[in-house]
Picture 1: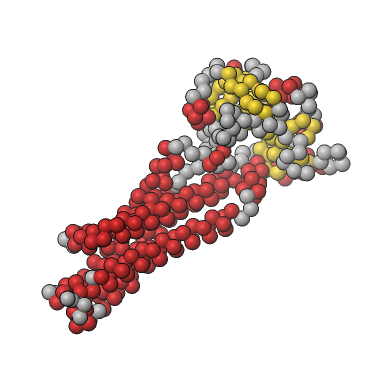
Picture 2: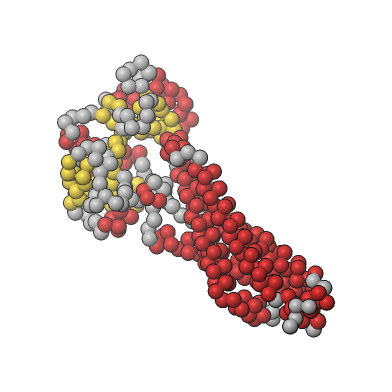
Length: 380
C-alpha cells in the first residue's frame, strides 16, 4: 500500500487520457454484461417447463390455429389429466411504443395448470367469474399505474376494434421465466366478439405422469394426423426453447460482438499504458538509480494497468447490475426475468484480470529490464 500514492500520481499525470481509458473499460464491461445477460436469460427461459406439461401446436406453425374442440378429444386420451388452451391477442395500448403480451385463456383450467402464477384468492375468483375481466402482472401494473377495478382499452391488431377489460387481478410469478408483464383475459370473450370463431392458438396438456410425455405426445399427434389440421406436440420446455431458436444463432453473434468490443478496449488500454511508459523512461532510470529494484518497477507499472482495469470493471459491471432493475427492463417483452447474474459478474471480473495483464505486461517488462544507462539518456 505504500506505493499506492505513487501509482495514483502517475495515472494523474494525464487526467484526460486516464479518464477516457477508464470510460472505455466501463463501456466494454457494461456491454459484455448486457450481451451475456441476454444469452443467460434465453437459456434460463428455454429450460422453463412443467415436468407434466405438454404443448400442442398446429403442425404447420405457431401462427396457425386449431379447432378448440380438439380439447375434448385430447382430454379423452389415456395419460391426460387436463387440457387448457390459449391464443395470442396482439393488441396495442396507448401509443403502442411499449410492448407487452396479451393472451386469451380458459381461466379455470389454465390457472389450475400454472401454480407459478400467484395472486390473492379473491382476485383469482373475481377474474374467473367476470367475462370481461383481465389479469395482469405486477410489473405491468407498476409501469402504467393500473389498479384493481380499472378499465383498460386495447386496440386490436389481429382482432380489430377497441377491446375494454376490467382489471380484477394482479399476479406475481414464482418463476421469473413466466414474466410479470403480461395480460390474460377470457378466451370466451374473444370467441364471442369475433363471432364464435372456435379456434385455439395452442393447447397445454397436463399429464398424469411426467414419464408418459413421449407416449402421450405421440397419441395426440396420431389422433389428428389425418385431419384437416394436424398437430405437433412436445414438452413445454421444447416449446419455450423454440422461441430462442427463432432468433437464429444469436449466441454466436452476441459472442462475436462481445469479443470484438473487449479486444478493441484491450488495444486502447495497452496503447495508453505504452504511451505512459515511454513518457516516463527517464523517471524509471532515476528510480533504478536510487535503489528501486526491477521487481518493484515491474509491479508499479502493472499495478497502474490493474487500477484502471479494476476501477473500470467495478463501475461497468456495477452499473449493469443496478441499471436494469432500476429501469425495470424486461427485454422488450421477449426476455422475462432479465438479470445480470453472479456468473456474469464473475466472468466480467476475469476479463478485467486478463485486461490488466495483457495491457500492462509489456510496459512492465520493458521498465523492469531497461538498462539504467540507456534509460538515463532520456533524462534531460
